[in-house]
Image (cartoon, rainbow, N blue to C red; front, top):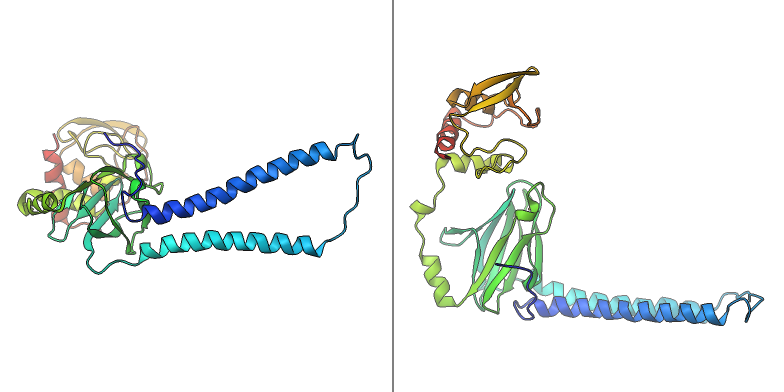
Length: 309
Ligand code: CUA
């Protein structure tokens, strides 16, 4: 079980972020209490019975200068700590280990330098890692609260983050950018282990076993799984799980009709998705894929859907 863990020192970024937070928080707290106390004092001191006639106050250069210079110094102090914490985050050490991160609706894939792809982020302790962030569809944001790191994964653009994990353990990895229906399920674990254990884990890689079936690769590459789940859960469109061979009620020009989900129906649904929409699902949401996918691709998809029992 994983939950929000706050560990000081879980990564090398904790110190800078927490210090900058504490500086801003302390200054805010000081002024919240100071202003509230002054306000209460003024209400009592200048109440109508004690001070029946209000005094008109004209400008005061001294006051103007004080309340310009003092806040300027305070925001520059906040800026200094914030900047110092931020600059480290953008300067990646040369010996950092590269991990490619793919975010998509709604999961993270972590790809290591030898090609191994993992659903959880395994990390060797005390080793700088650089995460190269990509998105296959919409904007996501990789967030590891315990490490105090958060960066957007933007489609069509490369972004990165780096850190050194310093404490063994399991930490929560989240998506911090609202990305649709199952945004809150877009989570993973960061597992920090000793270097030797990590090397063993990394070497335990069998490309032939790790590879997705061709049909699933095509579904993922075209973000089909964003709307059609593989596990039976209902998203924007029907799940692919267990649909092959079953009967479905579809709407054809507003009239109900029963069809069998066979190869012809699946191919037609890819080419003309709005011709026979399954009852209780919205029409005109999906576009035709006849110009996007080859006939061979469509065949692979159908073959893969057949296997989803
Ligand atoms: Cu991905 Cu929220």
